[in-house]
Length: 255
Length: 180
Image (cartoon, rainbow over all chains, first blue to last red; front, side, top):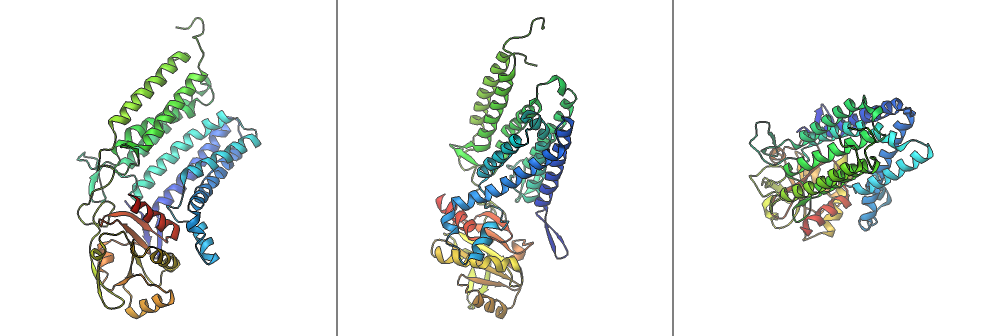
């Protein structure tokens, strides 16, 4: 864990740095993958960037709206504005950000007449890269920490030897990226959108397996872990997507 | 590789059933989701290390004096701009939650006169203690300013913030604590 890197008078927040690097790499990758599929790379890059900005702003505005009674009490105006727009971690409502980012992405896909399935395939490796960055950033900040264990690869965190759940996530995303890059060579034989669906299957399986090893896992009800429920929903949706697009019967002459 | 729709439907249903069973089997056990108090350490899930320091009025103040109510333990210095920026928010929360939660400011290695002057300038009424030797900041491994520890009514560290806080953030976290 190394949340702050002190270089002389300069305090660098390492998780933010890793996330920024991951974001840059992810957008670059998506852009190149878009070009491979005949989509304008700049449009892919910009779509990712605008969706991200919308997501960040939406998450913050969601927090401000849901806690508006707290915000309107802040005086004077300069303090109110500072509170609304200051980059204070922990003042976000993520699902509002996700909804707004999805809305902006959908609008740009329609406006720029992009093929959504080819675009999804282009973004699949980018999501894997962001997953790696999120895992490493959480490792540096000490978030998403694991349960105590005596396994030889345990890491010392928050005063105990723990499962490196952040590294498990990063490794699962790296494996996901490797699978996607390998499948890419066979992409012509697969229907558009398949890489994205495969990516969703791998990631949701990883979350289903890793989440029980987390010590700070959010719980929905009766001990059921929130992220496992979301992951199962995504897994079923991705598999149902395969079912929906598969032929009703095997073509004649097939084995 | 499954080829027909029926193959995929079967796989989807099997995945749903197995996933549901797995989620049920790996549910968080009672007490597992919330960290129990452990040995004192400035880390989430551990008892907050106690300290006794001198307040601006000359009295001795210990962190353990506030056990039984949530504490926002704020390490700061007068020369630190983000610390100065968050003082109005801390003061406002302190006024609105008097008796329900405590804001405790720990001034890092500054003279009493400098801190007193600052407290007067910013109308600070919440308790401020002077860590002149740096013993508390050392015990809490403070690496950057401001650093704030949210401590629950049992004296357990529940969240650590690096950087400036604002009023809604402090209020929502304290509301969450009181709702537990």
